[in-house]
Amino acid sequence: MNFHASVLTLYPEMFPGPLGVSLAGKALAGGTWHLDATQIRDFATDRHRSVDDTPAGGGAGMVMRADVLARAIDAVSPQDDPRPRLLMSPRGRPLTQARVREFAAGPGALIVCGRFEGVDQRVIEGRGLEEVSIGDYVLSGGEIAALVLLDAVVRLLPGVMGNAESGVSESFENSLLEHPHYTRPVEWEGRVIPDVLQSGNHAHIEAWRRAQAEGLTRERRPDLLV
Image (cartoon, rainbow, N blue to C red; front, top):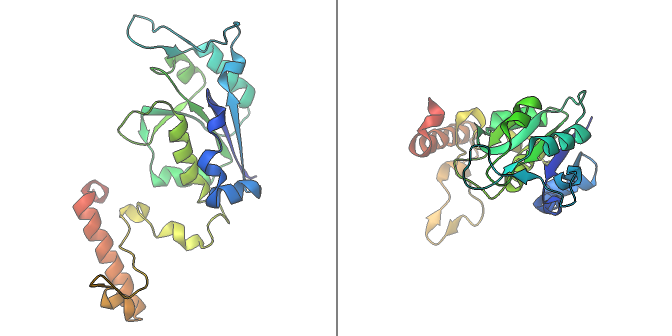
């Protein structure tokens, strides 16, 4: 079964967006994965196609309604759908490379893109939505976060990257940041490619790369080494 992503959003025109070009776009056009974006407003019942209302208890902003969103979820992801149901949210668990690999190994995902102040907690609980965050900051909505998640996942699908080894030697694999890269010319503005990378000694090269990765991780992301 190919990876199938279903996105629920108030802005379906944002998809596929950048996912329609480069590696992800070629894989999408070739049928390696599938994407559909559904307008949540289509499941509203009033003439204004309302999807939000004022927050219970008062406060600023608006909240996405449980009834409207539940109808959208049920239409796109019936009870027997094996795909995880995700809600892009700044209060969710941080997205990791390990979780990305889990998604890539599965049948796909239903991704809900929140807007306004958030989503009624009852639909999160009632429809088993897993809240996922792409970082400690707030976006205008979940669409950009969904694009980030899907880009990270799709590139790991079999056949998407030309060299499968590319996906196992980059940042966050083995809890390390990636080592520095170099290419021709050998000298540029007085800066020279390290001698070890020109030695042809693969054991020494791998040891150097490992040491560089450990050093960068220790300096920039010591939390990964815990």
